[in-house]
Length: 177
Image 1 (cartoon, rainbow, N blue to C red):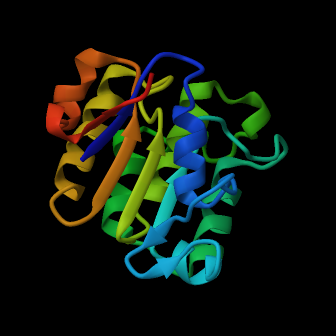
Image 2: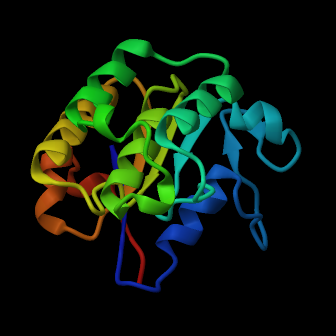
């Protein structure tokens, strides 16, 4: 697992969005293996999942509709991982709720499982612990430690105390200044 760290405003979210193909770089090129994100964006995006720090979901969408849309767009995901995270995040009771009425933490809990359960080579998570309660955060950290054994995970996280719980070591940290 790799960490992009640094003070607020240094560009962590922008870097992760560029790596995920949500923003175009001013210069240079992002490669996923030998696939250029700018030349072959569809092919490159099939190899990565991205969960931004904000919650870019229409406010009138309910949790259940969001998950159904993600499954439709992606075609498939690891149902075992999805079930574990939905249970651990206690999302069942929030399925009929509109995003407009969700707290930041609850909205984030709907975004994260869709990215993590998508079995891509690369997983990019911008501030995945934001708004998470302790039980959900523990489940997230455990899942990401397991996932890090077979896929590249890049996260940003302001809480330095959580870095070890996520399984991040100093050699895998990019400090932006």
